[in-house]
Length: 255
Image (cartoon, one colour):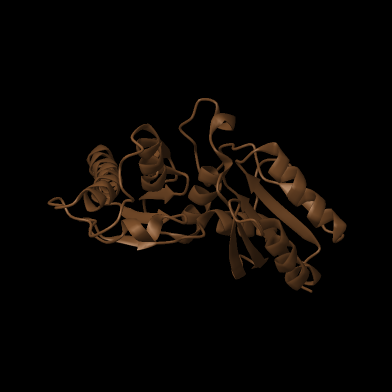
């Protein structure tokens, strides 16, 4: 067993994302939806398959405390030390724009740090999970700030809760939809894509330089088609940030 190996967990509001970190690389990536009746059983099975390859687990958590407590219990049952990342703080790698960095989501912070280690130059990172966050970082590591909006699926869920007669969102994504299901799906995805491209344009204007656009999170792949700007997909950026920490990279917060 490598001393740099660790089990990595990104606990969001709808899913647990997991991986084995070997150095700063990921193996065995998996995702478990809280809405699935067998979610915790599947987490346990994944742990049984991978726990023997690591001595510790690293967590990033933005979900309700009961879920964190349940995962911690499963990890400790298997003899794993448990460490949780955060609170966010600025350092030489990434200088956060938040006057109170601890108010920033730990998942956003880890994802931005992961990209800072892996990319040359400035970038805009759009993370699409339960929420859509869009953040800008300059080539020097200065975080300009960002925006938070509902992810397309969450926006549609909220709309259909208020208007229960609406059909299931379905069909092609187009600005010229000819049925309501397609119009709903198109509206949600095009709104998210428009927000991302608006932030990218504003960021490039502010910095006076072209920036890379990177999409991360479980909903990122659905946003790639139709974007006018060239973008790359890095679905597991939060787990990559945890892998950096497990591999010994300096990261503020409890260890």
